Length: 418
Image: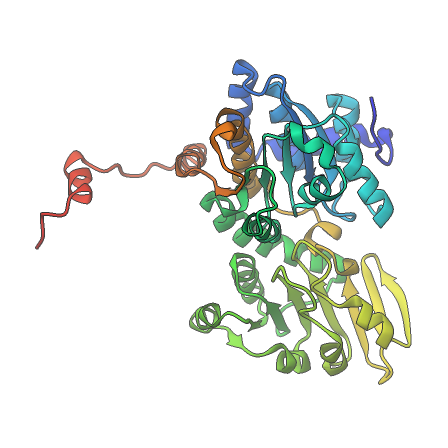
């Protein structure tokens, strides 16, 4: 079997960690049991470009239980958990191509290897598989029936492709499911980003000026958690509606040019590039900590910082110190990559349970309906979203009300007024 992982001797440790995360993923576990019985994915080849974590391992196990032939590669060079990669290869016989810290060339080599079995379905976390298929591996497009996308950044890229008329197969935007972005982006990113920052730096958050670039669902969650830890939260935004929302949620809102002067800790979660640029580094005070929790490492302009700095050195794991001409120091975490996965373990399994349940059921939806879908980006069907929410509530032991026939009739008609 073809694979490329760091060390198969890590497999037993990875198996234990994968079992631990499975305990907190009851929705996905129920889907796995159904898949194992019905084999709805039999004969389907899937290429997955995702963060190689213990939670992802449970998703891959679910797809395999359904009969799928899956290959997995990393969606970020620093997000791979090497023990999990090893256990998927050794104990689950899944071809995995991922090594934490791999260089740019190896990263793309692994993406090409994940396409080696001519997949029918792609599962993306940032749209790199889709991009490679549309640019360098177009001969494989004839096999593809559809794909899924997990991230805000990836969905933006795919909608741009669809708008330009160059997207060659339908994509389900898993990121847009309410049971994904309300919980994964808000509660998952909020907690795991702080976890990554604290593991890398061991700084005290209380009393710090914590600058968050972007007030989407990830920014909202991060602001909640940083404020809860005692930080003074400052939000930067380009969207006037989101800026008003941040103000009404109790946070200060400033342009980055002004926030750069007062911030102690900076985190970007925008999905855009050069959000923190050369002029911002020049304005930062001595000891400023800069991190990114958006998917790609373009949000922090590290090339400009490299050009500005008189010296740099690694002072802790995942902490690079840059000395500016003014002798002030700026600390960049995790090479500007996803800090929650570079320095920590990513989102808690309890929220990834819903995200990966969406992935599994979106794949099943594509197998059943892709032939009828145009080459466009689709939301997860509402019935799938609702089913996952119901399953999650049931596993939590929570019951909710149901509409009465009278209430259903009232909502469906217009004649009855005051």
